[in-house]
Length: 233
Length: 296
Image: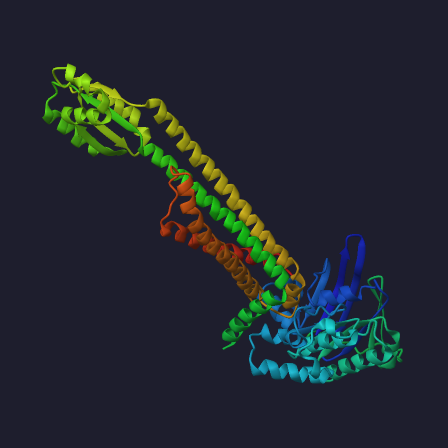
């Protein structure tokens, strides 16, 4: 589903991603682990095509993201849901308006949007906060709104950047359970985090990054590497 | 159906965006209104000055005194020819008798002078009122050349040259100021909109990242720009009509020689022009301001 081949990306003198090669299969749940500055966020930005690699290739669904522009890029973005570290909710829009945005951009309107918003907000436990503005919500609630927005249009891929950062252990567990629930529907999920507690609680694939390089690629609790992907699909 | 949903959403988004960012919206509307009132006000002043210069030009006269021995048919033919010339407004023949009557009416106290003379000493004349002072020198030279018909040609050449000079200066200066003021107006309005768009650049980025097309992102902003420009221009147009209706009669009364346009068509055209400028600059300003944030 997602393949990176010898990808490098630098910002000035800073080498954010350095020769990364990896593959993530359809429906897989993967943690990207590492300290701040390890290159996790850059890797997610490369997959979502917010950034383009200096060298190497990023393939999503078999297509080279560097070759996309205009309608092709729009189609790629519609196959993905992204939960940003800073949530990137529209401050002047209500929870319902924020969550509805991916449906609106697809030309949907009326009752189908309203019912879709209600359903996804019920799933994240915020059905009673549709009319609130992001500033009226807690940090955890804002993350849930961002997740709801990311999944409302049934994406094939869900990318999450530090979704549990600054949350209590209880709130972080809620978020992770929600992401696992979404992954159970077959959504390929990549979660960047430095929260070892969350990662250790689950038996999932973990890619450790340091200084822009992949240090290890394992299943937590298992010395064996994850099964090789079947290649891009 | 999808397009209808999108159109309704874009319009609703525009109106919601304007309301939720009302401080910025209000600032942009007020700025647009002030700039357009200034521009339209100067256009009105420039029009008045141009009319004044044209009116001065119309007052340029040329008088050719007819020899007593000139044949009337010859004079009539010349008058008919002059009436067809460009720049020539009115051509009037003043006979010797008419000249005497005018003299008597103007100098009632000096009628004794005429009693001393045996015959009417005043010559007949052809008086020309000219629409374009630029034709005066050439025309005067031509008439002076007809020595068998005209005795003398009187033309205030220094005044004519001054009028031509003022006219040219007024037109050039007026055009330069209007171009500069239009540039400043566009610059200020577009930058006000750019600031408003800049404040919402994250919104644009988010829309793009969830898969919005460029037009889906632009739509509400262009509609907002058009509404801001339209409301600002509407305020400017109303203020212009009201101020002009109040000021024109007062200015005409105080400075009677100023040919201030009092016809409603002039003000109406100016108001429509102001509205169009507001709408076009508002929407285009938004279109180009958003463009720079679309490459996400």
